[in-house]
Amino acid sequence: MVELIAQGVKTDKGFKEVHLNQVARTVSDHYGFEISGTQVYNHLCKWRTRWVRITRLKDINGALWDDRLSMIVLDEEHYMLHIKDHVKDAEYLNVPLENYTQMAIIFGNGQATGRFAMGSNEALGTLLTWLTVVLDLMMGLLGMVLLLDQVVLVLKVVVHLLELVELGLLVMNQPEDLTQIRREREPRLWMKQYSATTRTEVHPDMENSVMDLPGFSVDQLDLVLTHLTKDKVESLVYIQKNEARRARWVKKFLEEHHPESI
Image (cartoon, rainbow, N blue to C red; front, top):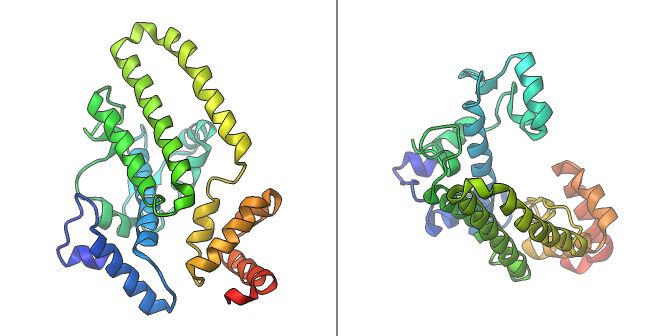
């Protein structure tokens, strides 16, 4: 992707399908296993999400930027207070950021994204801002649409996002009724979330952790994903493994249960 940008490819509106396929072919030729343009797109979505989060964290009060180490720096007291409320931010603070230079080249086109598109680190209360949030999230979901067994899930997530947008717009237009809005809306949203959880207890990162695993065909990984979605305990053990251990587990699973696929 970095080489494409160096050649003059414009990315302000995203990568075209021809570019995704070009990268997929290059990776396939170099490493000797098949990669699709859709997998490249999904991988970009993951890194773009990291980039948006890094951009937001660089703007928090008291944060400094170490250009040599590509690191967001907070003093110890500020760091401890921040991660107390935002535990997941710990992997981005006071540590060198993996592939920061490449992310900056691919995604850092001089325009901010999402809720902070106007340069402030305060969320903007406008219709355009809410629509931007939804569009960003929906674009990240589009790569899943090609997997037919995920279409229903995608539609449910989109409906949920639209309900959240509706709630946000009501809050902006009638801030004095915030308590009443929460009283009316939150039980309905909670019930939908609870219902979805009771039906599917699969780890939210399970699909990507399987389907993005290099060295295996899509058909082989589909067999693995089908098995793990039916076995909650084994899926939780799998998700805790690093990439190398996952690859060994998948190889052993295919040899024992689906030797015809090898």
